[in-house]
Picture 1 (cartoon, rainbow over the protein chains, first blue to last red):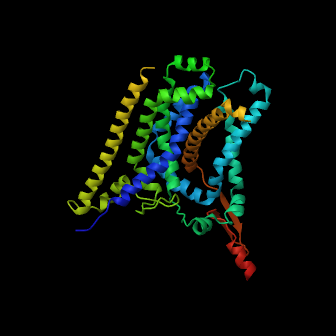
Picture 2: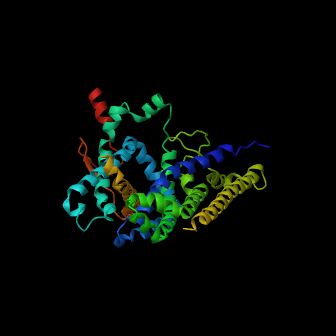
Picture 3: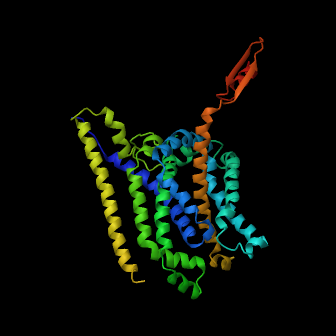
Length: 311
Length: 75
C-alpha cells in the first residue's frame, strides 16, 4: 500500500489559519471597537455594509486572490511592504489636519466623524505607496526584491503565497469577527461606561479597559468562529496557494491545506482504495478540529459570562 | 506629546483607521468585481499599426516591452 502523510496538510491548514488571523483579528476588533464606541450615530449604516461581506461566496475571493491579487502582488510587492507605514503616517497627518482646522477640532463635528474624514488620507497613502514602491525597492532592497529576499533573508518568493491567502482569508473572516464583536461591545451596559467617564477616565481608557473586558465573552467566541471559518475554508486556499505540500513558515511560499486536499484529490481517488479512505480520515480530522475549537469557544464563553455577569 | 498620547485620541484615530480600511477594502472589492464583470460587454483597446511595407495591422495590446527595440539597437 502507498504511504501517505497528513502532517504537511495539517501544517498547511494551521499556517493558513495563523496568517489569516494575524491580519484579520486586530483589524476587525479595532474596527468593531470604533464602530460601537466612537462612531457617530448617523453612520451606523456602516455595520450592515461590512456584514454584507460575511455572505460573500468564498469562491469569488479565492478566484480574485488567485487570478488578480497574486500576479498584482508579485509586481508591486515592495509597495505592499511600505503600505502599512504610509497608512499610519496618513492617519497622523489626518489627526494634525483635524486639530488645525477649526471646523473639526472644536466645532460640532467633534467626534464620530474620524472614519469618514480618513477616507481621502488612506486612499492617498495607498496611492503614494504604489508610486514609491519602486523607489523603496531600489534603495533598500537592491533593486530586485526577489533577489534580496533570496540572498539576505534566504527566503524564496512564490507567486501563490501565504500573504495572498492571508489577505483573501482576511476578507472572509473580518466581517464575521467584526459583526459578532461589535454586537457584544454595543451591548455593554451604558451604566458602566457612564460610571467610568464620570470618574474621569478618557473615552479611550473607558473603551479599552471597561468596554473591551466587559464584552470579552462576546469577542472571544467571535475570534473562535473566525478560526473555525479559516480552518474549514476551501476555495480560497485551493485557488490561491499553489497547493504544494511544503512545511515552512515562510510567508512567501504556498502550502497545502486539508480542505483543499479533499477537493483536489476526489477525482484521483479510486473507490475503496487507500487514498479514498485517507480522504475520509482527512475529513474526520477537519471535523474534529472545528468541533474542538467551537467547544472550547463555548466553554470559555460560559466562564467569562459568569465572571462578568455580576457587573 | 506624552500628554497628547494620554488623552487617547491617537488610538481612537487608529481604530478609526482600521474601520476606514475595512470599508475601503470592501468597496474596492465590489468595485473591482463590477468593473471586471461588466467589462466583458465592451471590447478592450485595439491598436492600429502601419508596418513599413504598407500593410495595416489591428490587434489588442497583450503585452508591452522594449525587447524589439533592444534587438534593433544591438543589430
